[in-house]
Length: 369
Image (cartoon, rainbow, N blue to C red; front, side):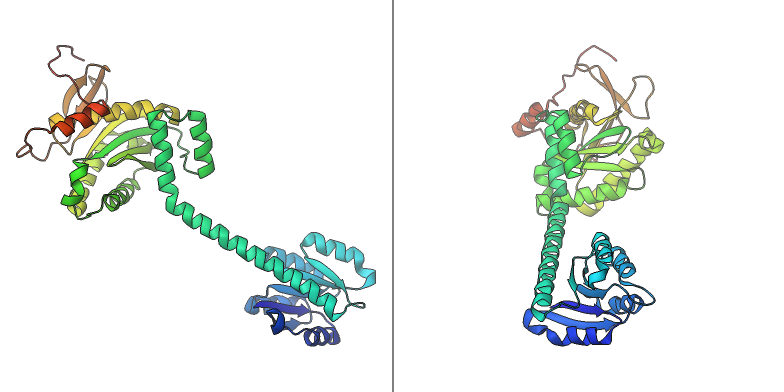
């Protein structure tokens, strides 16, 4: 039922309105009456009506001030003004303040009053429906926001969307970070296609979701970050590089190694990370992502659970230097593999995946960085 309340300093008016409508017949409920605006506000606090019928001229707080208060504190309440013939200027002001409608006291008939009440009731129902639809949409949007983000970033990384189109769609869907500079990290779950069977998460989607949650919690104290799953077991991580610690090789090394320890402990998986550098805008992210993905392919030769970091050839963190001769990049591999025992020879399927990703690197070249 929709709740209705009357505010008028004339007792006969209040009694007359209360008794001339069959409230329940029209899905309405009379919840109270007040003599002025101050009493009305106290009563509204407890009864929360949907519709308020109010006089204009009243002691202590008049109808105009009451309408102004309601528009701020209870904007969903529909106000119907009870007026006299000589109060039309005040009625116009009341309408500007947010009143829904008005009715003249002296010529008021039960049918005309009921018509206005039912009109206000219809407005209340429409607004409630719109609110429910908006809440539902926001709920669905929140549930699918990560999926939308994944799709957009995947298209940006593989070049299937123009950057201007990406910016426009990302802004509409509210999935574009506002960092002044970006540190690009590529992460891939080692042996992803076999990982669900080995991990505590038998479903690959649940495994990815759990992985992302651990990743978000682990990076939360370091800097703001954005995450996108580009493919099964492959992730793009963007850190806010304006935070100095986020660009520190030592800090990143310790953090990502600690994160790998947690992933191994809780999910029984390991991850290879490749940190490819900084860029001043999202437009530069695809190139850095490509380099990071290329470097991560070295885990095929150097072992899993690795951290590859792109840096200068002369000034680098502690680790083993290697060079990608095709791109003239120097990378440092920092983390040690868990073990080489039992790895066996790589399968033909592994070779195909690496060749597709552009990760097969030719060794034995005499070219040095």
